[in-house]
Image (cartoon, rainbow, N blue to C red; front, top):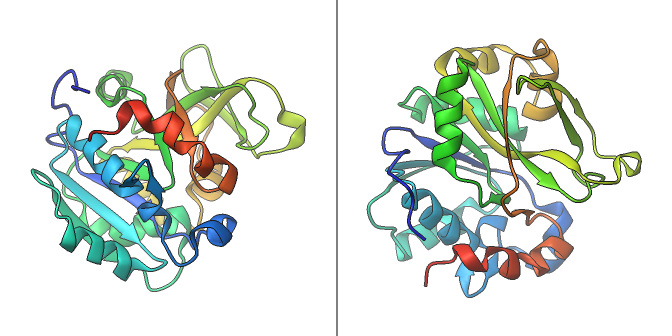
Length: 245
C-alpha cells in the first residue's frame, strides 16, 4: 500500500508500549504486545512498515514489560530506512509518564504519539494536514466504531474540538466515536504534559485541559486494540490489507 506522500519525514514518532499487558498475558505469556504474532509478522513490524509507508524516518519506542525481547527482535530484524530509538522505563509509568520519559529523545515539533497496542488504518497524511490547519497545539485521531462500550466515547463539537471524554461503560453501547490512541502534539502541548501531574494522558492530562483545547480528526478506517484476547484473535483479518509481505 502506497502512501500519498512522505508526510512524516520531518516528524518524530513516539510509540508508548510500556504496559504490562495483563489483559492478554494468558494468551501471549512473556511475549510483549509489540511482538504479538499477527499473520506471520510481529505487530511491531506491521506498525513500522505502516509508519515508513508514510515517510517516517525516526521512531522512538517507549518500552517496559520485557523490553529486552523487543530490542533483541530489532537487532535480529533491523528495519530499513528508519532510525529506531528505544527507551525502557524503570517501572510502569502510564501513558503520560511514558511520554514524559521519552521527551529527551524527541527532536521535532510536532511529534506524532501513538499507543503501542492499537492500530488504525486512517490516512496519517490527512491527520497531519488537519492538525496544521487547525492551529491547535494538540490533535487527536478518533475512530468511528459500531460499539463504544469497550472503549469510551469522545464528544466532539461541530467545529471539530473535543468537548469531553467518557470512560468505557456498558451505558455507552452503540455506535460512536472513540479515541484511536494517535496524537499530534506541538511543543507547547508537550510542555503542558511535562508540567501536569498524573500517569494517564487520557484520564489525567486531557481531563485537566479546558474543553475545546484538543482538535479532533475522525476516521472511519479500520481500528483495532490488540490488548485483549478477543481483539488479538481477529487482528489478522483486520490488519491483512496493511501487512506487507
